[in-house]
Image 1 (cartoon, rainbow, N blue to C red):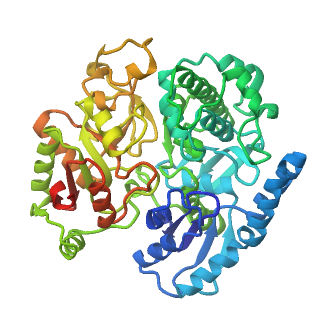
Image 2: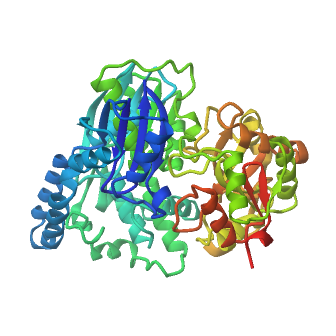
Image 3: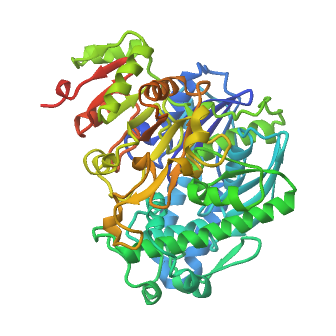
Amino acid sequence: MVLGVSADFHDAAAALVVDGVVVAAAEEERFTRRKHDPSLPRHAIAWCLEHAGVGPGDLDRVAFYEKPLSAYDRVLTTHAGVGPRGFPQLARAVRSWSGRKLWVGYRLEKLLQGLGHTGLRTHFSEHHQSHAASAFYPSPFDRAAILVLDGVGEWATSSVGWGAGHRIELHEEVRFPDSLGLLYSAFTAYCGFEVNDGEYKLMGLAPFGTPRYEADLREHVVHVADDGSLRLDQRWFDYRAGARMVRPRLAELLGPPRDPDEPLDERHADIAASIQAVLEEAIVRMGRHARALTGERNLCLAGGVALNCVANERLVERAGFDDLWVQPAAGDGGGALGAALWTWHQVLDHPRPERHGIDGMSGALLGPAYDDAQVQAWLEANGVAHTDHGDHASLCREVAARIDGGALVGWFQGAMEFGPRALGHRSILGDARDAANVGRINASVKRREGFRPFAPAVLAEERHRWFAGSGDRAYMTVTAPVHPDQRVAAVGPAPGAPFAERLGAVRSTIPACTHVDGSARLQTVDAERNPAFHALLQAFHDRTGCPVLINTSFNRAGEPLVRTPADAVRCFEDTELDLLVLGRFTVEPAAVRN
């Protein structure tokens, strides 16, 4: 068995692979409650080993998700290469790396010694090799092309590769400072969102705009080659110096950058639409190139940019592949999983388990779990009044009725999700037919920007009636158009109306999860991988004829997904949710709110 670890940049995580099977994986942020926690994941490591019953002498290897010396070489070379502007960041980098980051192998050794594991050999995978392994090895494909797209690893920013059996190879790469991920992050910052956190906000904002700056960006800022590789004109950027993403002169093309507290308007939406268009075209060209280079019919995808589910839909439509599979923990957290799988298969030369057309992520439900007995014990020990519904079928009928009546529900079941998406175990759920739920959740529950869309969870067997396209979409990694039969003439402001007026328009029979462009970030739910959530969707379908619910993450803005019953109750207490479900138990607001 192999323990994989990522740390020291963002989204630190641990994952355990036993005989090629992923048995546990969790991000450190869920334990420390510090969003995107980069620190050495001592809590996640300890939980993975405890969960799997790994005793002293049982663990074979440890794998780290990148090569620190190579990354340090890039950091020093980059900051020194821009001259005096880079010196302050260079000094900070030297202190950080020489004092901590370069010693990650030793720090891991000491941590594991404290847990009773000694004499372990540590392997260091390359950053993009880890991403590629996380994409291909758990995929349902025997062979596939591989794309890795992110900000930067050691030096690589995008990679094209190939996987077959238990071997993967990376053939071509784009190198720093030319980076699709950093390009998108730069415009994330320009629109007033936080880098490494707000990119999905930029993606959600883009459909409200028109790409009127796209031509200027292509002419002056970024050149995209036919194979999808790109070259960024560094006169517009400043991330090599480290203090900021872009230079002030970008305002000559786009107008002034947005302050985070400034209201969003049409110009910001147009900037988002323009850079999204550039990103999509680059990814489609790279996908076509990967198809031609490898001759493969299927594609696997990982890296932070792989979480751009709109661009992934364009890959499905235009790149020529039969199917696409995206690692649900596509960012650096998933790198821990990839490092473990790379070590098991590529280094130790073990074959992959038989997939039989089903991926190896277990629905991404790989984190800490709490059964009904544990939940009940916690509720009673903490004096939280609750109702025991006896069995899950009765619970689902009751919750379906409450949602049908307008309730917003915190839903806590079984094992926590691995990756950034709530997939029906740590979720906030609502009626997708009620357009008012968008404003209610954004304003009163999540406390976030009003333009942010919500994902639909749909019974897998009913997907074809409600959404266009095909294929397994269990992880919210690809958008899909709402089915034409469910679309309606827009009720509300016309497409050309001011940005703020278009937020509440009704465009389908499920308006609460239909974005302004008629798309939705789809999750298909099947009974095999996600039986509890499937049962609730089925109960709601039986009651209403609609197999779709809003599914958004159970957390408040700026906080990680809830992990424990205590986290769930605290979040419930501080929001305007109408019902909390923990296992087979329900808690009413009066039980926790004064």
